[in-house]
Image 1: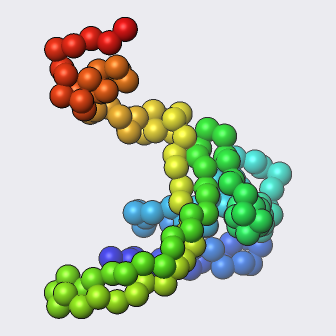
Image 2: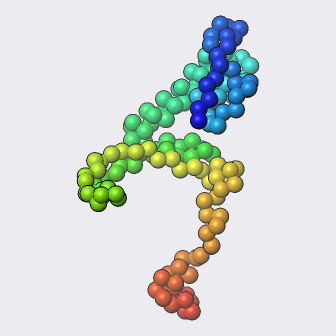
Image 3: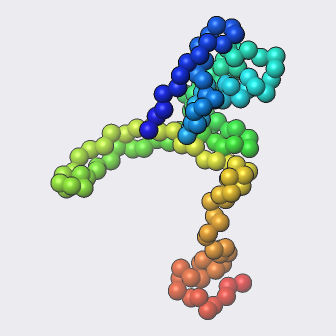
Length: 145
């Protein structure tokens, strides 16, 4: 459920959400801008918000140019094109056409996954290529050189 945030007036007479008693379950543009504002004493809230908006604009512009956007230590945004395909309504079984579309994908960097404690392969057993080839061919007891 979304919480409503009360608005108070600041010293520069602009409306700013009062976050003192509200715990947000997600990070929004305002929280990013507020973090920048608090970490750099020479910035105004408006300039911190402009920095956040400019970062998002650069990511969007890069994707529009069909480039992958790499934020070192954070992750990579890419466009993925999904072709036209035939889908099926699971309830009725009717088949219908799903239009081709382009989606944005994000892959977290290795350092971000480690900082979050999720390496992505933590639970998967470590298997070498030789072992996986042998097991897929049904020859577990043979070793290849």
